[in-house]
Length: 551
Image 1 (cartoon, rainbow, N blue to C red):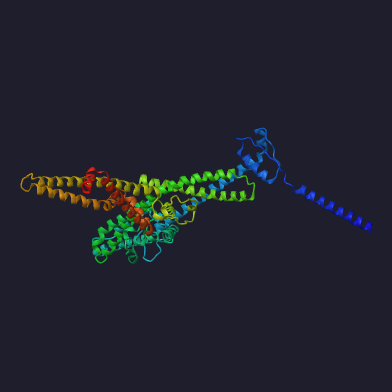
Image 2 (image 1 turned 180 degrees about the vertical axis):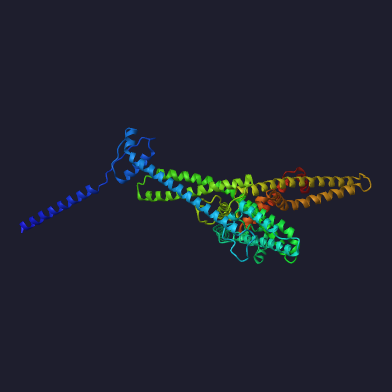
């Protein structure tokens, strides 16, 4: 029995030793060597990156004592990195070249199609919106259509009634063709028009109207509609559209006598197209004037956030799982901030050019401006690169006005209004006291029996009473009416900004602003009451009169 127990213990010991041997071999095989490497600051930035990667992988590192040893050690990695960057650069340049060639081929194909089918030779009902407006209203295309129309008009025999009728019909067809093309501006199947419709339906339904749809255009406040269809997003084509409309108008003036029944319809179409150009230009200018300060402030804030994110990435040592997850989040945030900064810098240059050099924005800049307005003025969740831009203002989502706009256009005029009210009420109280003293002096002379010229005392007393009543009336009207007058004058001086910001406000934001103005009016009235009470406490004549009544 004892021998069996000894044999079992010996076998168990052998098994345990064998398992320990296997475990040690596995640990030695898969062990991660812990070591450190010190890189001298200022040499080979690529070497530092490779050193961190190798340290994470568990490889051995070395303490380089000289730059030559370090360059030799990392020569293969640096060469591979340079080859990779060169290959990516070539791929990008080749892709850009192919894209440029495709655009050039498409332009040549459109030019050939226009040569085969000259302007004016259209039939109603065909798809005229297959090409974008930006490609249709170029300087070259507009000039070609001008020449084609003039050549075609020269081919008609206008000395006869039949030839004059044919020439007039041709001009009417050209006007109808342009009318049909512009009617779909902002609402066609083009990507920019679809993006525009999506924006206005999600974020601007309160200021959106279909201008030529008479059932929807009869809104209670038509002047407060900033966005509409038709709307020319490509503001760069507005001068070319204006030239073409003017050219067709001149042709119609020469040929309108031959068309009696359709004169009113064609005149209405020309007038609507001219209004479309003007309203699109005004809308683009107002949108850019509102978004330019927002884009500038957002660009500064995104740049500072990007610097802070890069510093946080550099300081993260990935020591724990939580820090590694935080590093992934920081990398995603840096990528989104970089995209937002590039878009902001690109479009900010366009907005600055519009305001300073009276240029016109492109469709991409207008759409980006609407997205930024929706994010900053309304606090909406806007998809795309705008997600990385934080909300700059706490008052804008509720009132539609930024803090700077509140200070400039509301608080400063209100302070001026309070000062004017206080000064006016103080002067009015002085005038009232002066009138009372003069009336009391006249009564005292009458009681003392001092004679005055016939009617002089009565006339003077009547004038003082009228002046006293006028001062009382102005004291009652000045506090509530002065704020409205001051704000009206101030907003009239900033008419471009005020009209644009009122149009872009939501109805709830307009209500909040009106309530705030009413509250400031009440506060101005309270300040006026306090000024009057202070005058009654300080003025010595009032004190003497009260003291006499007490006696």
